[in-house]
Amino acid sequence: GESVGLHLPTLSVQEGDNSIINCAYSNSASDYFIWYKQESGKGPQFIIDIRSNMDKRQGQRVTVLLNKTVKHLSLQIAATQPGDSAVYFCAEFINQAGTALIFGKGTTLSVSS
Amino acid sequence: ETGVTQTPRHLVMGMTNKKSLKCEQHLGHNAMYWYKQSAKKPLELMFVYNFKEQTENNSVPSRFSPECPNSSHLFLHLHTLQPEDSALYLCATRGAGGSNEQFFGPGTRLTVL
Image (cartoon, rainbow over all chains, first blue to last red; front, side):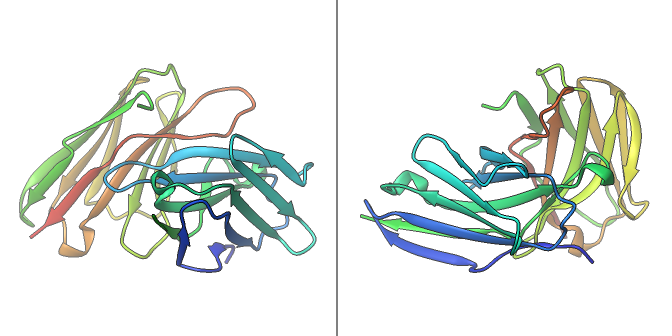
């Protein structure tokens, strides 16, 4: 079946470093992607999104890159801070499949001072 | 805060109990979702409601029964659950228009003994 997955379950970085979290998706019909951040004890929180007609989108300290050729999505966090420690999920939306997002398993980002 | 609240935040119940989870949104959104989040697994979509009508039931066992009495409230009624149903249950909403972003509540941490 179709799936969205992340390459690494955990990522540890030093404060101030740049972080890159990767996600692979398998459905070429996906036309919208979201990155969510989930802190302990909280629900997922929207970080940034990108549509399939774009290959890059920037937010505040975050950049999402989309490579449709290899079905790969990445989230780059600049100058990572301890407050960035959380689980990060990618999610895809397939317009023809209804109104639900399909989520990956998540990468746990740990930032040490 | 995302504008989506869930109660209770924590629930412990026996396999013979009946309980209900409540989700309330103040965003004026038309679509509401129940997800199950288990450790080491992606978010699993359970139910989708659009304009108070159930549009998706993702092969969820009948011991889970959703109810959407109005556009601001969503319930998940629980009856004769199993220990493997222990998980974080998340409610999410999505507005009309072009955005597919979903706004999540903080979740209810359910433990079935």
